[in-house]
Length: 111
Image (cartoon, rainbow, N blue to C red; front, side, top):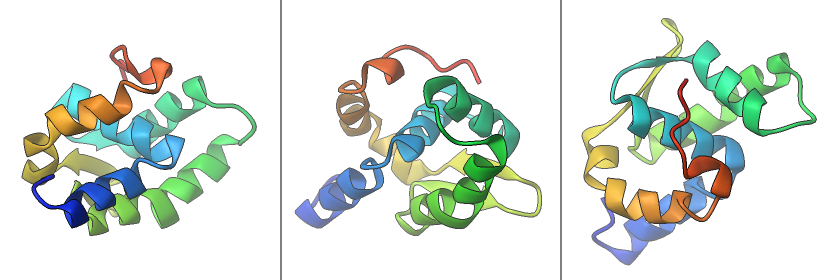
């Protein structure tokens, strides 16, 4: 996943937003498909200032499509499920280093 500077830049870019970091951490922790409602709950627990509806809308229209375009997540909008890709799983050590900077993500998310 992080074999070239361009790929590493992509990972840094998608990890820029806290909601995307939470989604990636949850998917790495779960190692299975995660319902959007569970991802929303994980975000609500770790952030303030947005309603559940705002978070779900941002996930559906911005964050999950960006993670999918980067090749890190498969998002099934009809079934409302997100799943890590093989590309994300290969890059877990690099992603873990990035996520460990955020103290709220250093522990399992238990979504």
